Image 1 (cartoon, rainbow, N blue to C red):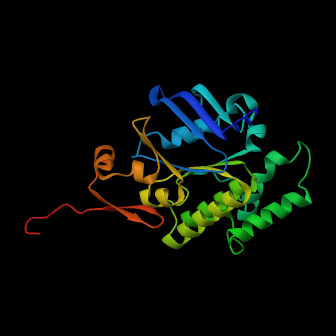
Image 2 (cartoon, rainbow, N blue to C red; image 1 turned 90 degrees about the horizontal axis):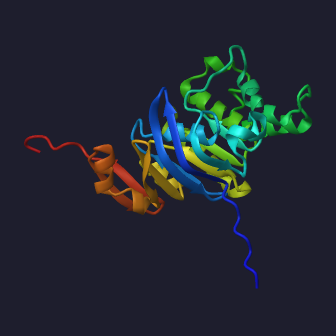
Image 3 (tube, rainbow, N blue to C red; image 1 turned 180 degrees about the horizontal axis):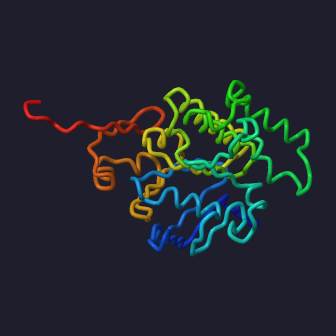
Length: 268
């Protein structure tokens, strides 16, 4: 009996090297991501998380092999890639004078034929995203007047409106309070489970990274230094080495929790 062929990964890269401004940032990164999974990218500032996301999206030059849903992003063309891959940047560029609804609607651009107009389906997708993210009150407001947390949710809405197969998130909750952090991450996770969405998220919060990510990929100085479950990656010794941090690691029902420890003071 012939074995069934293995399904192609949603995303992979081999020997990925990236330099920015002439300075090497990523050094031979190899990564394979299964369709429908959530991968949390973690690592200290400057470790290469954002650069890796932009290279995977084909937005910056890179050496090595990259495939996302079978496409080579740098060769496939932006509209083609944007129909299947969405990147939510940490620092979005927002056009002057557009409302939050119009900004979300821009996510439908790759699906609208050149010289064409929005269809009923495009409008339905936008309104569904607004509803799921609870953005009805923000939708008519000018996007540049929103707070950082409000804008972050709207920019996520623009990415979700693309109806991507792969969602790349760069610190998606950095400007959100704890309640909205949970709501946004729960929403993305529910969409992943419902539709088979593949999520690769750069996250600073190690506890959230472990709770939502089925797999953690730890970057340091542009190289992957650990790749596995939260239990495999988030150890006291490794975090001390990579982050130069004093932490306590607890095993909770949803995964590992990382708590910072205050330096002992004299007399304590």
